[in-house]
Length: 350
Image (cartoon, rainbow, N blue to C red; front, side, top):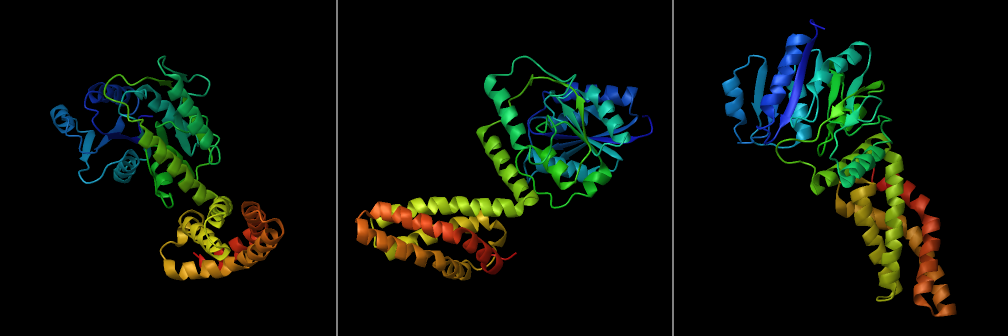
């Protein structure tokens, strides 16, 4: 593999302690296997001595990009991929958890026809260093399970990735959030043949872990974004129905405190704001006033049914909460498909 051109993308933030040994390990790979190897370090203005370190090493095959107005691992990776000019690109973490010695095997997989390679802990030959707590293990497994709608890769949460640069250039609508750029690239680059290369995953030796509650929340947001990208109609309808269920609870509560007409209006308004934000997320750039009026008109069909059914039950049973529940459920059954179809076609068009 002496002829292949390879760029290693290394996103960093306050990783100066880990960099010397990692650069040495990559240098050994360059010396032994990949002579045409370049390293691009994309640093998010760490101000921890990273710039001085790279300057002192003065290696012609190492390039440092310091981003001063932007932060985020995923966007740092994209910046590095955009700057790369080689045939193949490898992305890895800077904390020492990914073994540089696995890079040649990942490049070999790409040469043999893989669309994408993943340095994997969870295939035969892959291992994880002792010391992982139960919560970290559980977090990894749940995150992998959440990625199942997009890929069958066993270690979809790995940050050790490989791909041809032409595959990256074919990506559509890249919109990453959080730290798991691999899942974004697999989906948006249309990668079908993903090969997992076994690695030994080391526990971070120096510095602090970046795995925080905020990072986990960002991953959840990322999964929702990807579901909207791959299954937009399913996500839209499922969300619309879920909001309808929450609106039923709002309606019953409002019915105990306000007149029937007011309760219906409160529930419809509740549904509108949440549907506009989550079920019809793609149409929020249009006039909220026009959409609100249209939403109320479309949903009035179910609301009228709700009014007469609830009134009949109140007159016959005098149990307002029960009447509200029966009326609301009846209106929901009548209106969920009707309201969704007509709102999507007329009010929240793309």
